[in-house]
Image (cartoon, rainbow, N blue to C red; front, side):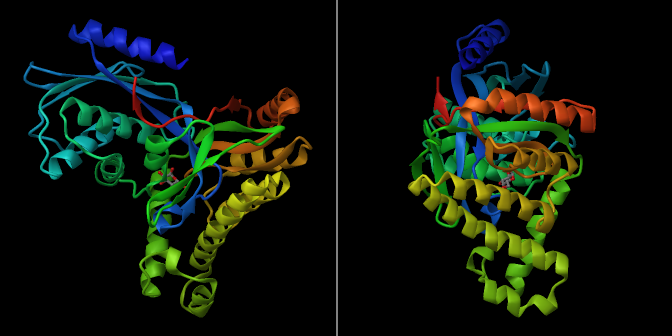
Length: 381
Ligand code: GLA
């Protein structure tokens, strides 16, 4: 699948620009647990997957930069000295944002050609955006010998999203996509940006994603609203972030904030604890406890943090009814996208059939079921 993608990008590139490109693969990510904790300097537990984006790049001497989004069949041509965000610019803003952040650092790049394509289902919450940003910054770094470290690159990708896309995202997606490892996940402390690489083997169980195939239009502003609540409460408590806030601190200001905000902050504090507990359960291979933590995480996301939706709640509650599922929750920013489930391998087909049928009956649309392979991060191919 990935080789096919690489081949397609390479062939198209040669057709368009009559030159062999530099090729980069950057993966999407899943997240085992730790949702909406990254921008609170908390803990997360993501992993890079075997689906992602392939970018082909070369220097250009045509006097402009030329981009081609192969899947959308859209081209874009621009002048490096006149970069700004494009209203509703979609994929273009991820690329322009990365270039702008590179330029802000005083680093020089010259005109280039670019073709890209991916196999991460759109709107699935597997972070095709971080994969695109990372593949571009990684590729430009090589092409123009910028000598950026991977840590600098992910910060560039994140800022591109803040400044050009307008989403105040944390660092989880970019980190996981850049630093992912084969058959393992990253227990990342977003305060120190240090991660432990944890081998993942769920024994008789495996990770299964179910795509609700919904994407709510207001998800980006709702995301920024959540971010703003967390910042407001940290400020009120004179703390740098919610990571420094304790349950006692929160109780002390309960009277001074509204109930909604209280619940949101409570969710974040609880979720950071759940990540720690989950990591311990992984160490002990205690699948039952892992599964329970996933269900608890979903409940918090849905009832306290309010980033779920009917479709995701339904998928999780149906999964809970199945004996072959030991844990499930919504994954990523929310308001659509996928649930992540731990499912007994031998019963996977049975589970897939059941869930697809009930989902179709309830919402009159299909869900998609994917298995994922935990893979290495951004790299040259
Ligand atoms: C999106 C953001 C991440 C993270 C998740 C929620 O994927 O890009 O930074 O906040 O949502 O955990």
